[in-house]
Image (tube, rainbow, N blue to C red; front, side, top):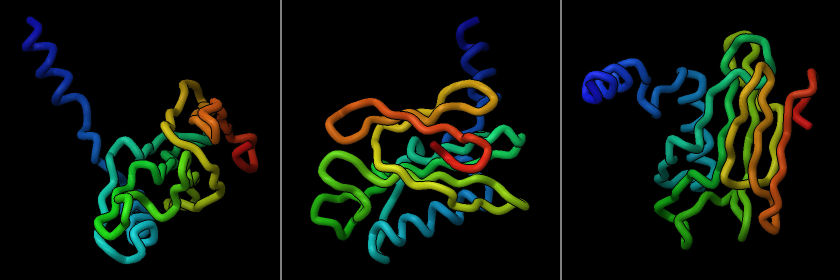
Amino acid sequence: MALLIGLTLAFATPPAEARTKAAAWVVKEEIASACEGEQGTIDPAGVMERDLDGDGNSDLVLAHDAIYCSNSQFGRSSFCGMQVCSVNLYVRRDGLLKKVGEVLGGGVTIGEGRIPAISMHAHGGQQTSVKWDGKSFK
């Protein structure tokens, strides 16, 4: 029975790296920028496609703390500081992802609901969050 449930979940759940074409393009561009044109990778956990503004279309959160660069002394995105990294926020408009915000944070998670809160730790480890207010993330 457990095997049957496990197989059902495995086939029902898309792979973590499944992305829309628009998100895949943004990820490629962000890695190139973060790694200053050199090779890099991103942990799939740092690429979150969800409806963030309640319009029914998948939007994107890209967390730079998930980008690893082969050319960096520390192996991190050039958009990371000592404690936090850039977190880029995109909304989908006319099929394209448009960057509408950037915050500094790490350990990003997205809550539940029609318009979810995007939570993360900020400088000093404090918890913070942003949420779409109809025009921007605040």
